[in-house]
Figure 1: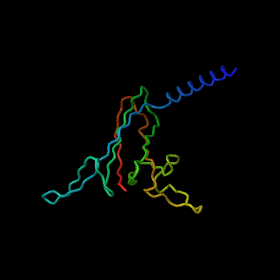
Figure 2: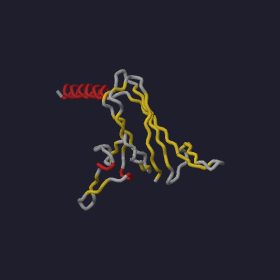
Figure 3: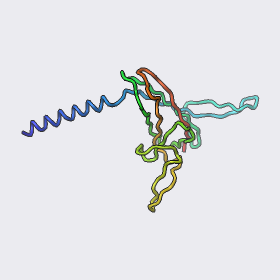
Length: 157
């Protein structure tokens, strides 16, 4: 009897696992980070260039580019692309297309909408240093093979 129950539970786990795998859209995501360097040319004009983020220091301005592709055979509908914020990075939340989370991706909103509990039982408004994840809503329908690029600005703490 234990064998039949164990086999039934194993089969159920395989079916649930297969359904979960099918429910996950096939979205490929690649991330690149660049440091924004500001300099002045010989004519006194300000120049901004993107350099490799191999060496960064506190205060450096980062540009994080997220490239995505629908690799599945079906269009994506109402899909949100979620990325955790790298450790030691503080997001610039001024981009109106970004939704952020300050609790590991449980709740989402704009910075002005998010609050956190305080140790004494109160609440405080969230600040950029509290951001743990960033999210973008993709277009209503993303056909197979479509690609896109999203980006955000951040500062090294």
